[in-house]
Length: 131
Image 1 (cartoon, rainbow, N blue to C red):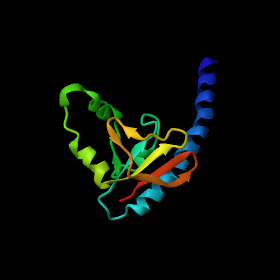
Image 2 (image 1 turned 135 degrees about the vertical axis):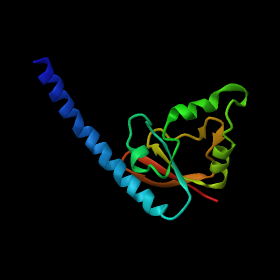
Image 3 (image 1 turned 90 degrees about the vertical axis):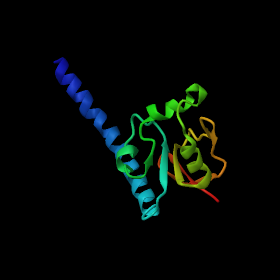
Image 4 (image 1 turned 90 degrees about the horizontal axis):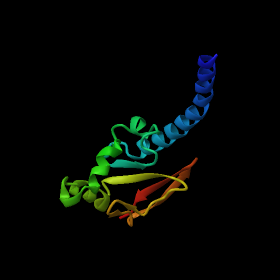
């Protein structure tokens, strides 16, 4: 009986995941079309561990593994993130995806002052680099 209940719980939870997947797929398709034939990237500043952007934007996603990002906070410059910082300054990171209610102005010590809201799709705010 417990196994049946767990199975039914799992099946019921798939509906919300499918909806989230479909929404993120639509956003990914939108961005991939805009980034076609460009060496530009997307930072999905969302729930990195529970979203589908890292798969759907696999060739364009910047930092799909937040464990790597967390290393930015290590003291004494243990890792060199100058290329990442430069990407935010020069627009190589073309788009940033935020959850609509969680738009940030900074990423560790990097500010997003050159990014302006491009569009809202579902529960996501997409910001674009402005020169």
